[in-house]
Image (tube, rainbow, N blue to C red; front, side):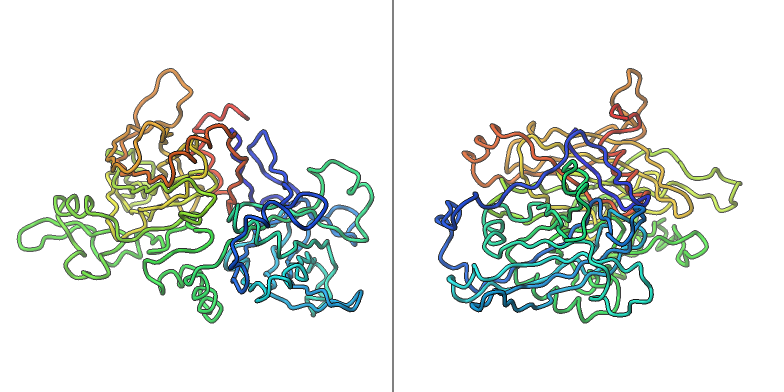
Length: 492
């Protein structure tokens, strides 16, 4: 497998499960400014707003710390304009991320200000005068109050012209930039490329929603989840961070005020989880089992976009809906030990290419059903025809690590484009064992939409790209790893 997981873990250690490393490819051929990419550019590249993301850093080392200690790194992004007067530049700060504590391999999230916007010049001749500069600094020295006075770990730049090329030809593609600093040791410069300090970024042309998102999110004092609640069902952001449920926070048994089951008009009804339809709150709070099945089969109304959608670099989109699971084992403590009669709190993890998404959590259900208004439906950008879809069913546990129940791996080449499939699979903890016992079933609905059959055919001649999926903590890393490799990882 060439899928890699990067996490913010033990200081100085980059946790990876991959045989290959993604290396930065040049966005412009060496020598000369007139390139093929520039010749193919549309005329309306001036005055465009670009959305950028700082993904993370690798092997960051501060010149002030000779023992290789962990850092508190943050990034300052500047737009630099080269003036006609030689040696004179003007700088404008676009964003300053928050610091990631005690790590040499940071990962910045949206709450840590990893996104930024900038506008290309109105005149094309001025584009080559601008570049974006990334200064990585260390906040380890508590006596320094001004962030811009913190020790410089390294700096790198990327011409705005190259960023435009990336947005046109490879939107949202991960780009690794090598950091340079005058104090960096020669051993680092002359060593293996894998040991050099780098940061990863990506760009795309901003949509109207992106601009509204950045404006409103900057004014809100709450979390990213609160902003998702504010904007409702629209989630067209650069990276869909669905590592945790955004509809409702997990509650303990003692915090559940409403009864799980009740009798209304002589019918036994169950509490709809994780919550009722926002537009029909009263009528969908409690439903019978048959009513829940009927609601579950309706089209989803709450889609999460993962990737740029139908951009130039994508072959199409994959529409995935997680409908229900049945006959799951009870992985929680048996009745009597905790005294509350806990059952499995299932959620589903979906991984496709570099995207990782989770459904909402359904509490105390061995046969959970996800309603159309919950977080169950995802739109993935298709970048290569041989990419596989990985699904895992897991038990949420707030006290210990999550318990992985079973998984499936789906070859999407078995399905024709533009046809809606409703599929039911048995789930197993591993696929590389002779005797397998089913741990229940999962029912999904999926559909592929392809843009161009010729482009799809030509893409089969290219190898799958190396992919990196950023995982925020150990618990979600274990869930994602189980989805891709199962219980018995042959690569370990």
